[in-house]
Length: 205
Ligand code: C5P
Image (cartoon, rainbow, N blue to C red; front, top):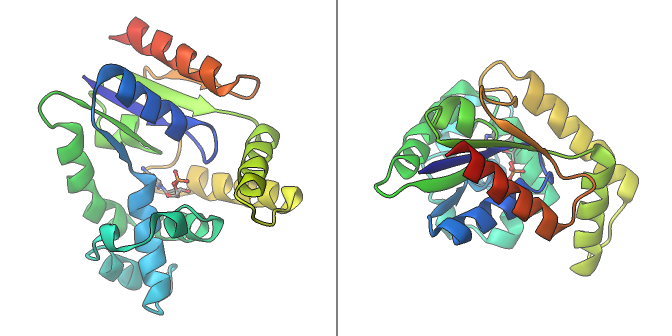
């Protein structure tokens, strides 16, 4: 069984995808990390993330060599969103994601275009959303819990900018796949969101 989990940043899709993978005993790929690694690598090599050639050159770099905490930072997320607009970058990362999705036994992938581009044949497709306010609040608390300085208004603005870029790019824009079940986590606890996701997958398969 392939489970596709798509949605904007901080919607809860990563948490849900991880929980679904544990529940069904399936391997999980967070595809945002691939784009974050490319963005990070462009920055480290002094390239320009808005330049398609610079971004494509960074795709060959193995992301395992980059620090995960660094990749999860807001800065890396912003860089990822910029390199991900280039069709050549999306093409370069396609095969790896496709191979992961179609491995024997199934898989859970989360991202922006899993249900639309990477695995349109997925048996279960979830589109996870939440209000900008709820998402900014979560990110804010997460950062404070990590002992980092955080500015709620700046986080909300960054999320809104990123949504705008992800929704309006020409290739593989963020949108719900045909047949995807919509899950709004704005008012749900982590446990409620996971239970709702499992119920939706059960209904779909
Ligand atoms: O999900 P995450 O916040 O880690 O993704 C970072 C950025 O990578 C997103 O804002 C998006 O621009 C890009 N991305 C993408 N396609 C995916 C996953 C992530 O374009 N499948």
